[in-house]
Length: 121
Image 1 (cartoon, rainbow, N blue to C red):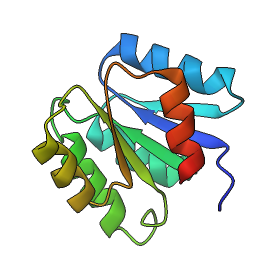
Image 2 (image 1 turned 30 degrees about the vertical axis):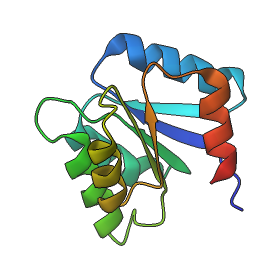
Image 3 (image 1 turned 90 degrees about the horizontal axis):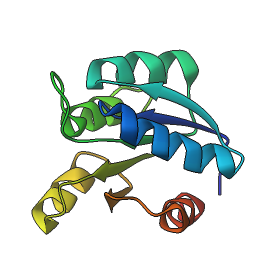
């Protein structure tokens, strides 16, 4: 079980970014943020977070594409990704896991569930 300290939160909604970052900070995690899939890839390489929380619906590269890119790149392939999305369909969840995500959380996110999922990694 790896210790998770630094979490990269990827979301193009400033509100969601703030809410999720606060939940993480409240629980002692350090947070880095990205507002797009492209920025997520750059930030993941620069910061080497212990975990990525990935939104799906973003302009440009979406979260599925960004998750796949992270899991295929040897530099970032060991970083677990949890998808956090308003898309609550089972097909979305399955597709997310197929792109390399370890888990899938449907928004709105509850703090307890988020922390539980992180501890389960």
